[in-house]
Amino acid sequence: MPALTWDHTEDIALELFEKHPDTDPLAVRFTDLHKWITELPDFKDDPSKSTEGKLEAIQMAWYEEYKEA
Image (cartoon, rainbow, N blue to C red; front, side):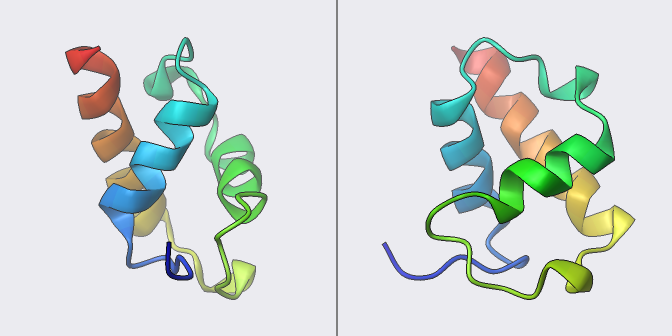
């Protein structure tokens, strides 16, 4: 897989779902979400470039995966 950046919303969401399949994404605080994203092995972007909007988009994409499971 190519390096993930903050703009790879769907790919990050899928990796989070695979890593935390039983976690309700809506129950995850943004501080924890940020940490989990930056700890993904394929994540190569600058951690300080995240925004609330990007975190929310990732959280919602992850939630869609979670609902479908």
